Length: 181
Image (cartoon, rainbow, N blue to C red):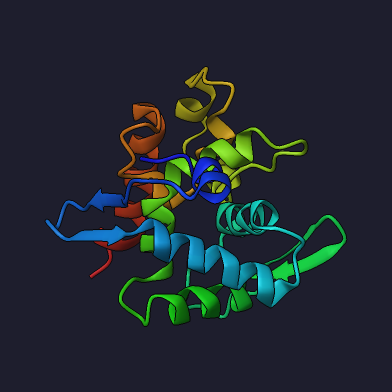
């Protein structure tokens, strides 16, 4: 994976890609990524691409990855309020519907983690309370000080996410979706 911060500041030279278990390969080129970040910048009237990327990461980490529910997550970046419906519309438009919001987050999951964990006021992933509640013993046993920033379902296939956290994310998914018939 590339470092989005470098792509934004230097133009980058590599494509971002991810392989899914379903053997589906999706690629986001640097041009597409930079165009999307630029569209977010313009849509929210943010001062620069770095701030726009931060807005994307913050909203994704807060749960803006569900495009099927009526989710309206709002955060303030500097003095500007950003929201998930607007972000989701920009991403859908930017990729002409060829990738879903959650796929976008999966592709950039490492960069989202780096941005969130390195920010001045990092917020935990949107599933931290759910994981603490449903797997209290396992969650408490994880000693990674950054575990709360990995607590997003788009990290469940991320090889850089600690395996104990990925396992809890998969167990949560299985309990919610695979056991219901």
